[in-house]
Length: 205
Image (cartoon, rainbow, N blue to C red; front, side):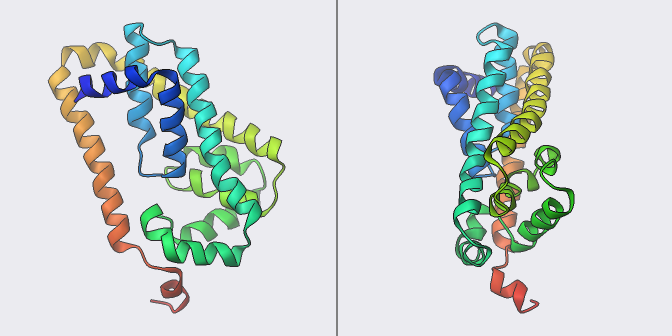
């Protein structure tokens, strides 16, 4: 499994990493930890460079978040309710999570976009209230890039540092990757099954 992941990332190259990181922020169940950890292993092997991976991954993260930012800019909160009511199950967005991100954004301001980059759930959702509040585009991109840049660097460095252990315990590492991906899939299935539409929340169900 480890070899398959590395081969996939290697064939995709830097463009592949950019697209995967953009997709990870548009469709949250895709795990950035696996993508960046695998890229870190390739850096350790000398097949990619740390700074090139870091730059394209961070640009991909910003690009993916711009998708939700522009939705927030163009749509009203009432329209978002209808969208989450229809598609929230598959995006694993719950209205309560959106309102939580919105309230945090309103309380702490633009800088929270940086801090929430380290939250597994709210880091994508916060782009919606940022767009709704018409946060200046350059500030949104700056804080998103700074927060995601720190997080991506940690993940890449972690994969790079773990490379000797991965090579030594390759079979166990493969099982670890499978377990991590499987956990992500199971978490996604759990979110889909337990998700409640907006109307259910409004009726107090």
